[in-house]
Image 1 (tube, helix red, strand yellow):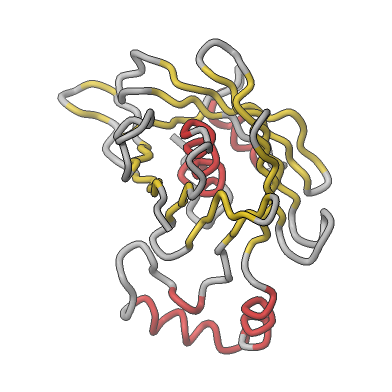
Image 2: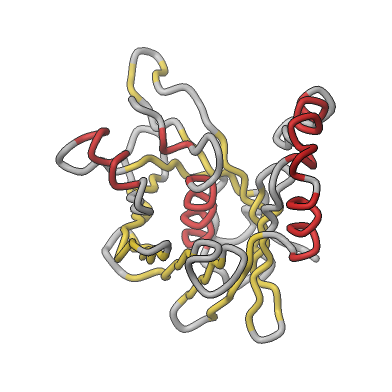
Length: 225
């Protein structure tokens, strides 16, 4: 299946003495409208970093996406519509304020199921629902939880870059389904988001992988500076 693969990277904040945007989302297929990369940073509220970190504990997120790491051309923003009770709703807006899509995260056991549920809606295109991990892998993970400490230590020394933790890490793969199709897929190996459907807005994809990575261990937007 041909797809555009999105990968999120960190990077240095200062280059040649200038402050630059650190996080970058790269695109594997730039034959269409997607660029080779966009840059993502958190948008801090009036209270600064401490206020952002306090709000993100309840599920709130706020990101800016840029065409370059010097913030010269805005691409999109991610804002929180609501967050509470384990359910958070986000909206992705274009550079002119137009709605690109809506993303909803329902935390496991707090929303409508035993697994974390992600809903992606692109107006005029599709609404896709995906669940974090497969049920069979979750059952196996919980059953083997007492052994995870040992497995984790082994996997740290026997894992590929970008997949540290291996089997000891909780299941994270997500496959979104819409009308019998799979327009989106997040693969935990390498933390890559695959845009399988050609109609998926690349800005929505970039916003989605930034959100997904913000809810993982060692989240990129959780730094204190």
